[in-house]
Image 1 (spheres, one colour):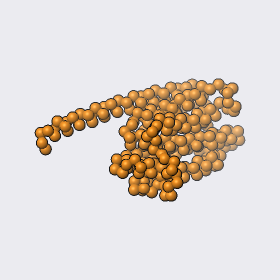
Image 2 (cartoon, helix red, strand yellow):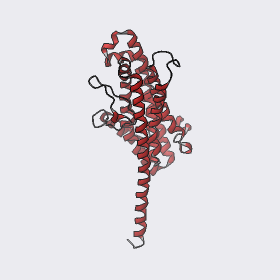
Image 3 (cartoon, rainbow, N blue to C red):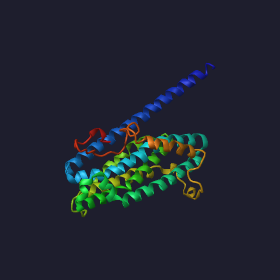
Image 4 (cartoon, rainbow, N blue to C red):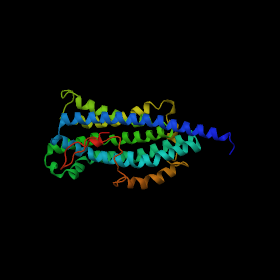
Length: 292
């Protein structure tokens, strides 16, 4: 190594450290804002709906879509897709990265649509499985089934949000994905503050609609702000073999083992960008550590 190379490498190292510091401070700010809005959201929900029977019914109805979100979105998809997309973008270029993104998008859609349709179709059976005692009351069963049907499509939008988060991370853009849960919180805050006369039916239905709107908002904000770097070319929808590029095969090879692992205590950690109040039979207090 020549003496001239040493200053250059030192400068590169310093620039790398400065970049890490800038990105780290931005992500920290985004996480702080997300937690503050999440905390405000949880307080408003608790103040408006309390911990009565209707609130319990909402939490039960939300449990299955939320569990599937952890499996499909923040769990396996993030851990398998993001590093594969980053590697494909660096080594094979934008065109192959777009093909990989589109292939995973199509395959994820093919997987999720039957899951969502099945959840909506069998909503009464799901409610009976989660809360057998409530199935005795026809009105409560109908309301719980309706909320399940409203919230199940949330799974699709929040999974797309995780997919677009991979695009941002592959391009070393970290602030917006970290701040996007604010959109979810704002949607639930708006749903909580809506006047009772604005929507027909029980007020608790507004929370179910807020969850759906929040998932759509969290995905939509990231999608709209991708701008010219949007990682989807509609011509690739005609590509005959979705999910089979030099990179995507590796992505799904990693995806399925991690999908199964994401259901374990280690896989389903507390690092979830969306988690509203958790309500348990023996502890009905809001879990503020999940305010994000």
